[in-house]
Length: 350
Ligand SMILES: NC(=O)c1ccc[n+]([C@@H]2O[C@H](COP(=O)([O-])OP(=O)(O)OC[C@H]3O[C@@H](n4cnc5c(N)ncnc54)[C@H](O)[C@@H]3O)[C@@H](O)[C@H]2O)c1
Ligand SMILES: [Zn+2]
Image (cartoon, rainbow, N blue to C red; front, side, top):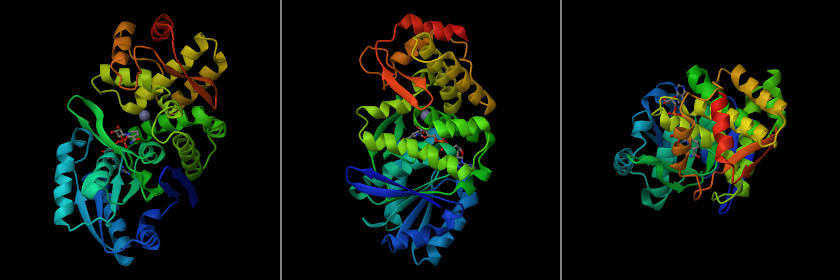
């Protein structure tokens, strides 16, 4: 089992990574001082496979768990779902010391995490991510929240968990397309700050638990440096300025991970055009994403449309075009004042 300790402004918490952790959650919670009532928040898709082993372990350890289901899918990452969740938590008799265990992908973790941040002004949260994306990205860093009709993730809170339990065994049931989408973020983390991870993926030789630990470490290092997203954390948006625009223009028919893959290739090509990065590095990035089964050519939207879609990205500051660009594998930075013509040229290359 790997343990990664995350420090944040109010303390620290462990991320535990190992096969079989799901069944050990009860013992881990008891050892961390929890007792009595707790809530497992999940959805029918994930709950069908993993709620029972988790609940059994919690009961065996002497805890008194209740299962609460919320509907599956991004359309339900809403304040309505959170309101229903609050009602269920009150009915189940959860008090200020009762932990919420969020068992599911990023949608579930963001929604249940937001409920944990706000119910009774905050109750303990345990993240049990079950998608690759949730393991390496959304369960780490403390951001929780829900969507509004006007846009994604517009309401939220920083909520640090008590612990994160990553059990790679649950990935066995994850649909292949979801796994590939998560790999886009794993590869992104390799480019940001883990050359050894990137090289192992290129070589096709690695152990899954090691891969998870390496990818998680990158996110941990970045959020520790910048817990409230004021500076360095922007590097995690590699591929996302292009990617968000592609997602939006496709009306979200392009999966996030696929958009990030295409966006990462665009960022690498932009870096080459600006003489920041050798062409060979951009080629390696494109090849690895393609080998993973991810799309690498930008979708055929007019460059002007893509630029307009980028302008509505909430991560964009002022009117400047800012991009996270690679200088090499393991070396990225934020660059401002990128000429529009260069961005258009990259979009036209595809
Ligand atoms: N908080 C953050 O910092 C952060 C970071 C990145 C993304 N996000 C959010 O994460 C969300 C995307 O998360 P996601 O990609 O995990 O999608 P998701 O949560 O929608 O999960 C994808 C699908 O797989 C199912 N599933 C999950 N685990 C499974 C398993 N082990 N076996 C079978 N099916 C399983 C889910 O129920 C769902 O149907 C978005 O809402 C995004 O905004 C948040
Ligand atoms: Zn992402």
